[in-house]
Length: 427
Image (cartoon, rainbow, N blue to C red; front, side, top):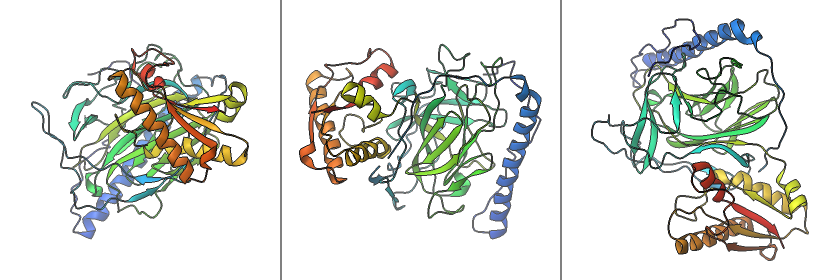
């Protein structure tokens, strides 16, 4: 799909192919330098864009809300073997089963997602080979693919310099739909060889729909062991530029007025106190010099920040969170949930009089009885983790309500996600 009216960027041969033979040190060095040159060229392009239009738009003020806090220990999701489908290019082979998977420690993870959902899509129900139904795009070749058991967005041919990207198909996408405090999360896939990996790009504006309010900025870059913004960022602990961690990696972004924090799996890698631009929207893309692998993303979530959970508790006698996530139809807690759980554990440590009933809720998918049992199992799983983290068992109880107490309609993905929640109720 080609879209007219896009911003004009300097013409750059950014994604020239570089032949890499990892067995030869000389060629490997050439590939490293090519990637570094690519980033510099892209940065120059965004610098020129900012010089040309950045001063035309005024930064607007928005209402304030809340943000995060604290986590445990689990594994990176096991890599899935791709499944070939008719009339769709088969993704490259995944990591061999013999590749050891790293242990990730989430005990100090302090990312807490916003509680008011703006957009959420796990891409379930999408059709292989079609464009994702709840998204728009600038240009490029992007479609759904079957990767193991997951439906994923496959960036078949994209140039992040243009940018060629996907963007949420929101009804208010021409407006600034990002509040002063918000979070963005998604999962992206990496291979065990550097030459196979793409860089993923998160843009905090919409170049297709927001021309009148555009506040251009450089993208947030996600590499296999690193997140950077405008040359600021760090490597994943214990890793180096030549040693990827293979499999699905979880990316989390927290924006609070001007402060930007970026997390890769259980670790914060970017912490910038003052970002001098106004985020207005979200675009996602992928690009790379060699490109032997295939770039995939899944589980995208954009949420508005909220007042601190403890403040909500003081007002309502309880607080609600959708930040505790589980595997589909299971009570297995996802590692990224630990930020919210750690926050609650710290709250109970700081306030020794607190006692909570942990209450699980589901959406209406599936049978009533199955949902009731699932909600009970999930709330019990949360209780067990909190006890392991040091909360006395006599300060916690658990129960499930199944689908009987919805907070929103079950006719939209966001409504269903709002109903799949855990509540902490004082007793």
